[in-house]
Structures are given as structure tokens and as C-alpha cells.
Image (cartoon, rainbow, N blue to C red; front, side, top):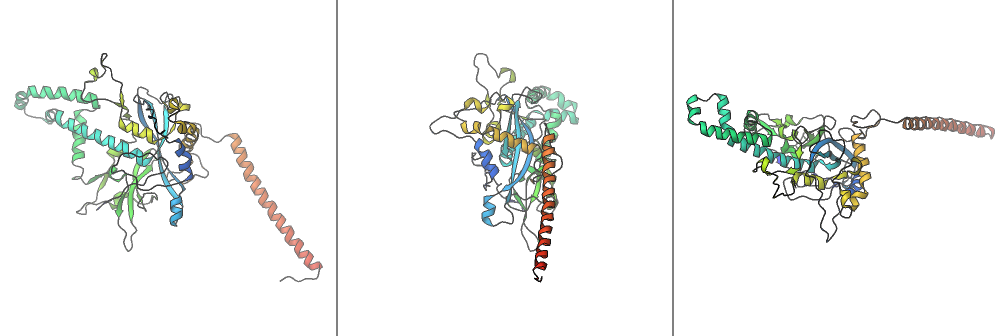
Length: 423
């Protein structure tokens, strides 16, 4: 049986969300955390917090990145290593009506636990609502496609027309149609019977194998894949899912109560990083018709979805240099600490994007960056300085060897001259 273990939390972001199954377990301290934590919102006592309006934006996943950094907790415990793995996600808030994200956008850094907590919850609710509406409005359509008898069609023509009209409204709102939703929802409902387990079950670190005589305990949790462009489920050697064992495959350890092998279904997890259907931050009342949503006489300011608000509040922000019109710099008194540290946050985000770290969090020494959306190549001056440093180091080493030889030979000559003997 798979045992439920809470995910580890990173100290980069100190704000807390309401209690849930995603509640953090452990705090990891590091110099990187201290650097970027300065960007976290500081609420002034007795002052109502200014609310940044981001309803006109959408969430765009950019990169997942592991970073190995010094941990005070591991050092105090006397662990085999003092380097803890921190897990980050970089995302953007882009204008919802823009095809490209070139201006008026913000770039953000959030720990993976928080990113998955909010996006998975939102996508699960969206999935459930889609299947409920699909079941209510698409069954007649699906039966017609399967070849129902003509007599039944004629007998229920009025009901069929009503359902098809509802299906059209439903399809327009959720951007799906009955051709796809019926099949998708059946797969979701029958996942267990088809020997699949949802990959999102492991976003908060679950035990795979118990410790035995010849077997160490193994755990499953989220990891970065495809050079940070995806989020997958990997095998870890610790209960906080910080130490990845890339040589192991989760599916090799999955089985149901009858011993049959199970496979992972990544369909829901994929929606958290697949930008083909990004999360739009404007909260729309699905019960109202789209054409009646904006009423010229009873206008109400658009609301922002909770998933966007939570991600925004948890994240370290890089906004001003991207011309983000809704940024925190407009509310300096409420976000003073964050605005003052924005440059540091931007620099750190750039370092993660430019290939400073490998997929498993190790610092990359040499080689070319694996991710370069902007100009990340080494300049001529940097190449010259690096070459000069290397040649200088080699020269000093040669000089030190020559000096050592001269001193040794000189010592021998002095002893010979004085009639001494060498041991």
C-alpha cells in the first residue's frame, strides 16, 4: 500500500495557505532562500494590504528547476550531505489577449510544492465540472453518434434538441465538445479498473517501498523532466523527496492489491505545465451567458481566480523591467521590501534559466547552457578573463614547482659544503 506523506516545503516563501492535504512538512534554510525571501510580501500592521489586479492575465509555465544548496538542518543532523534539493517553478503572467509574451508581463519564481498545490487543485475542479456538464449535456449526442434507433430519436426529438443546445453553450464556455469529453471522462472514471494511477497522487511525496533487510525505503515525488520543460514523477531515497535516484522508474514499484502492475496517468499533471490551455485569471460565472456577463447598467469589476491570486502572492517577482502594468511597484508602501529586492530576484531567475544548474540541481561546470531564451552566451571579455585566469594559474603552478626545486637543490648544496650528511 502507498502511504501518504506530506511534501517538504522550502523557506523561499514564508506565506501560508489554508490547511489542506498539501500542507508543507519541512523548512529548508539556505543562502539562496535568504536572498530571494526578501522579495516576499511584508504586510504592514494596521494597514489594509493593497490588492494587485491581475484578472486580465493568464499563467504561462516557463521552467521547472532543481537547485542543490546548503541546508542548516542537514548540517545540524549530521547527514551524509549538507546540500538539500530545492525545487522551483518559473512562470509568467501574460496578457490574456496577447499571442506572445513580449511586454506588459511579469516573471515569477515559486517553489514547486506551492505551484502544484494550486494548479492541481484548480485543474481537478475544472476537470470535475467538465465531466459533470458532459454527463448532463452530451449523452444524447453520444448516443446518436453510437447509432441509436430512429424511433427513439423521433420519440425524444424535443429533449434531444434541448440537450444539444445546452451542449453548444457548454462547449463554447469550456472549449470542449462532446466528441472528446465523453471519451476523456470515461477514461478518468475507469482509471483504476484499467490499472492506472493518477500521477498527481504523488505531488506531495509518497512512500513506494518500505525499508527491509536488503531494501532501502523509496519514495515517489515530483521532479523536473526534459531539461525543465515538464514535471514528472521520480523516485527518491528520502521521505522529503530531495534526493533523486534517476536510475529508478516509479512504475517498477507500482502494483494494486492483487499484485497487478500499475501505470501512471500524466493527463492531469500535464495540464499544469502545458501552455496550450493556460489558466486565465479572470473569474467568470459559468452559470451566466457570456453575452450577458458585462451589463452596461450594472457593471461589476472583474474578479481574479483564487489560483492566480495564490500563485502571485507566494511568488518572488520580476516585473518592472518587463513593463508589467499591474505590478507591485504601483503599491510601494504595501510592498516596499519586495520592490527593493526585485533586481536580486530577476538576476536569480535569469541564472536558473541560463543553464547554471543541471536537471537534478548540480551546478554546471563547463558546457553550454541547455536553456537560452535570451542572450546567454559568453562574451569576448568573459572568455578573455577566463583564459587569462587559467593561464595565470598554470603559470603560478609551474613557477612554484621551479622554486621548490631550486630551494631543495640549494639545501643539498649547503649541507655538502658544511660536511653534513643527509638521512
